[in-house]
Length: 178
Image 1 (cartoon, one colour):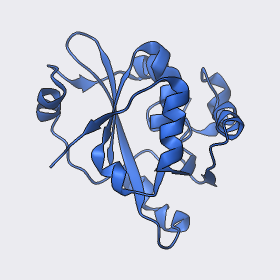
Image 2 (cartoon, one colour; image 1 turned 135 degrees about the vertical axis):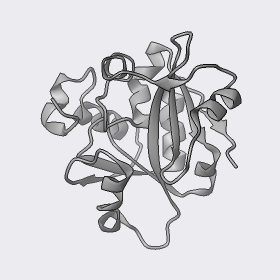
Image 3 (cartoon, one colour; image 1 turned 45 degrees about the vertical axis):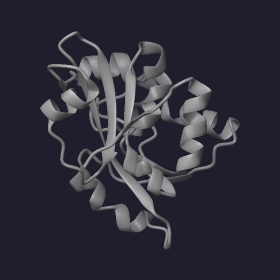
Image 4 (tube, helix red, strand yellow; image 1 turned 90 degrees about the vertical axis):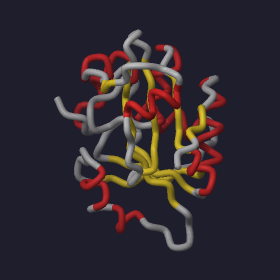
């Protein structure tokens, strides 16, 4: 199975259910459907079709990480940001950061590789995943992210994303990166 909407019904929360929940909470978004995107390079190939003139967009890459004590982290960064896991671990105050396995990703965030997203905290909150986000998001109007599958992207006001986190009782931890 891949991370596309074709297999969304095998996820703990499907993309359709997530989108309906956003709507029920009054959180507006624009949905874009496209070919499955697995990398930042893939995403860049379809970004122009999603651009809205005049908006400051925050496009993301997401890392599912574990530390040597087997604690789980979701880290959302601006898509072109270079990251050093050792330096990131020091900044987070944890040691031995590494990428989590596909099985743990599904278990803790309810998504498959290629569809990692801040919206996966709908599952991650109850699993005890700590969420960190690039502080550069504060300068953006919109954030573009997958709604649990990698053949859809939602464009959402950053302010609406904060409301989403409030609804989940998640407090995003800001990463000040140089």
